Length: 102
Image (cartoon, rainbow, N blue to C red; front, top):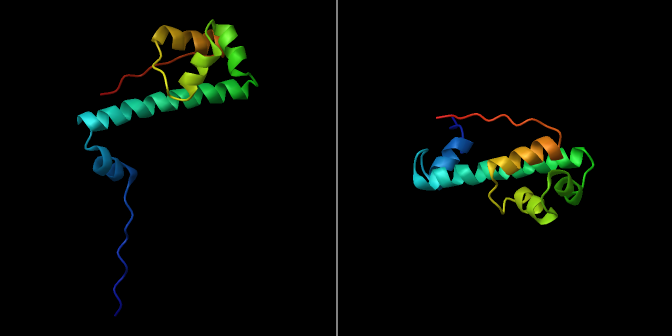
């Protein structure tokens, strides 16, 4: 009787554990923070593009610069909460909802 081949699939969670360490370790927390900043940039870019708005137009609507919007969308800049709220509310006409998880 033939043996079934071993399934070599790894869950994404296991991959992150192997690559960055378990949740709570410094390297994993740094990864998680970077990933959240990346997601935020992507969300802003998607909202902007859905409204057929350029980075320059968004910047003008919320009182910042095109280069700052670009840096946020490309995960190259930290963003203050007040600025984020202005971009979402004034620039994109949205509402910001935050959740804190432990």
